[in-house]
Length: 263
Image (cartoon, rainbow, N blue to C red; front, side):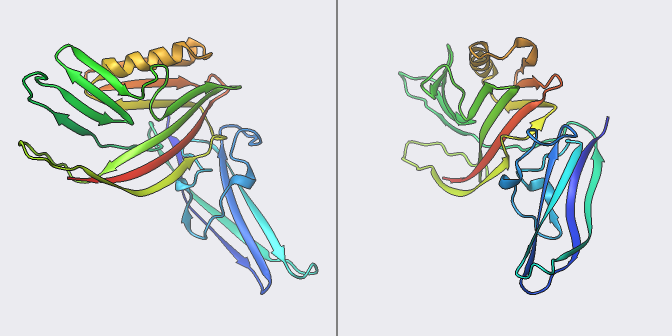
């Protein structure tokens, strides 16, 4: 079944001096958006002709959409006039990708006392790997996930702080010292916590799927979330966690930070 994706929102209005129209938009899984979508006070103003799919209040694949026009005037006897509103949309084959990130930093030693030891940063975690297996050094707390918080309210709530490492692929080998430089590029809120999705799939590409699978299982087993509401699978190169809405949906808060990395 194809799913709805949203494009540009545009409108035509007559706005005199001393008047203003502020347009907002939000999507919902249910016809009644109250309590199932971003509250209007949290919705940012839309620019005429803006692609609304990048707004935190709009999630592709959600079938219901609302817009709100807020009128301001200096003269109570006259108001702005909104003539028409157009919201572009199209249909796409699932799955709909809300966001993605990439990047990994790896150090491999050849010391005699630490043969083939690797220190890896990926998905917010620092991992140490050697012949006997891998262990997650950071975060220290074995009962939490780096950058992911999973809780239960009326439905499952997934909060993700995603880090994207930007830069070209680069490797270096030798005995001299070399620095890995990083600098903040930008950060954006991609989904408000109030947004409710029918289902949600979180996929982590990794060279250590068994390690990530154990961590997800531990965190979810210790939560109050019923085992029928999620499923954990792994392959040699990834871990996938499916969260099922079961008529209530899954709440998603998602923010993404981009870091520029160079050597």
